[in-house]
Length: 414
Image 1 (cartoon, rainbow, N blue to C red):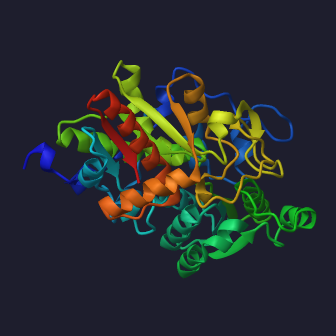
Image 2 (cartoon, one colour):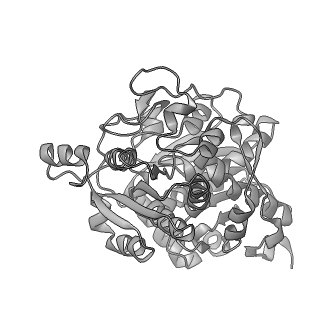
Image 3 (cartoon, rainbow, N blue to C red):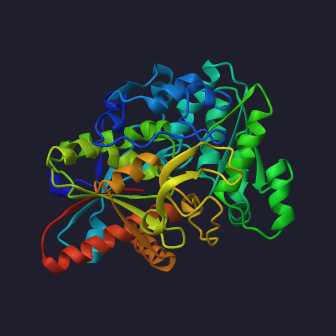
């Protein structure tokens, strides 16, 4: 079968990457150091040990290009990795475009998203450190679902603080988490001091990821057997997600192709980092490839935010990070893409965007849903609201290129 005829590009299981790719090894400028929230001095490992195991702290600051994936993690990865890369033939036909559009389908994971790529190693490293319980936040529920399953795999208890608007909009996600054995609470909740404070001042608040993070951290620091896990933003999360883009590069080689544009939705940054970061070395070596972050117009951290030190949460319990931010107290509208309703962006994504190595676009919800419907009707997969932001931008890019009648290839993550 010719390259043009292939629809599903499957990488053999033995080709699962054995190492995560660390973008910090190749960045022209590393992000500014995080600051202790109390002293405002650069973070030390000891500042992070109350909520993270040392193995993850080491990954957070490492500049080694490749970090080995533990064998136990790789064995679990085999349940859904390598994930398929699809050629969107029917979408191309519907658009009447000469462009070749590919999408990496992370929906084959047990929880239906890319989040398990980081949840599994985070649970593993915490288990190795003797931790018994993890707390976390979740927006739309994908990360909470992933960590719930990962904790069950390693016999850890799990408590998830789910942003209140998503808790109401997506009750099935709460059911998923509880099915995997986790406790799921709407945030803000009456479980924590910060939750009670927010509810007292704003009883009708839809909640934010910043509030949920504060609750999860407050909960974690009160118990010696408990740590906190974050599903995006931090360097070690981007590291774990790099397995996606590494697979994509191998799969593109299988069909003798290479993308002109790599597109990912962007909230905290893990989705974008996963697919785009492994292409950065090529770009730095002169390859003509664009890396595009797509965010909601309702929460445009990159396109409208300020590049400055800010807290990752509302209560100021987290370190101050140099990132593009709308302010830790910013409350975005209750859009359906709950996973993108975050006030800030990964320091790695922020620095690369600041250096002009990444592009960013903000799109509105109506257009996103229109793109999602077209994708569902042509490719047969109903995409998540978050992934649909990348689909919207890929379609817009195809239309723009079509007007110039110049063939392009695209790679996006669904």
